[in-house]
Amino acid sequence: MNNGKFNELIRPSLVLLLICLVVTAALAATYQVTAPIIEAINIKNANIARGVVLPQAEGAFSQMEADLPENVTEIYRADNGSGVVLTALDKGFGGKLTVMVGVDAEGAITGVKVTKHTETPGLGTKAMTPDYLSQYIGQADVTRTNEAGATQIDAVTGATVTSNAVYRAVETALAQYEATGGAE
Image (cartoon, rainbow, N blue to C red; front, side, top):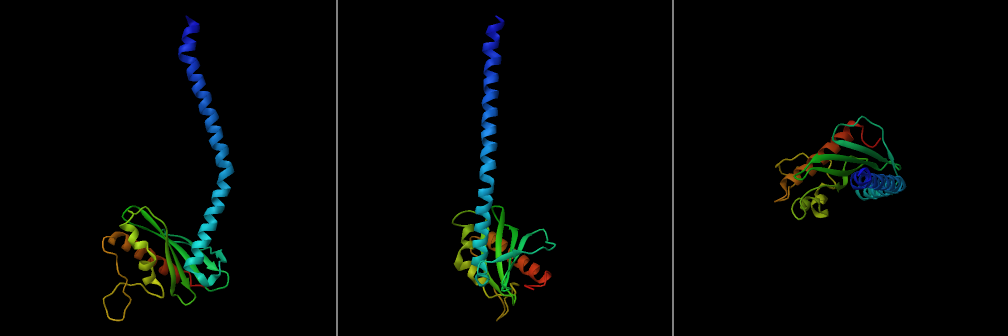
């Protein structure tokens, strides 16, 4: 009778425990092997995005050490002195947006790219199209105004929350650019 309870209760539990340990070890080993590969891919993709928003840098960047505000995650200076690339966060409709902004040595925006988001496809993503983001290029000040001849950044109808998040992220990046002394 004792042998029956062992086979009925304890043996399946031990087998299940052994299976869990083997699977956990396999997952841990897989993570150890793939983590550096994933990190290298992420760095490569970030450098490609930096090159898109600041093409004058010719793909060569060095990370700047600076006290960053809460919504700015990183600043990279172009090795040739042509400008900086800042990455800023802001809250969109679906969650945090990560926006990369290239700023040349004169303080004008050279490019804007949304690198990470959880916005609604077809709606919020309208504020991430190259056509929409191109209105930032060449701007040194994105202050919203209706005055003639002043900078005017338009929102996307149906994606106002996302448009505003992109706008605020760009505004934050420009403020940080000024706070760090520009591209010096």
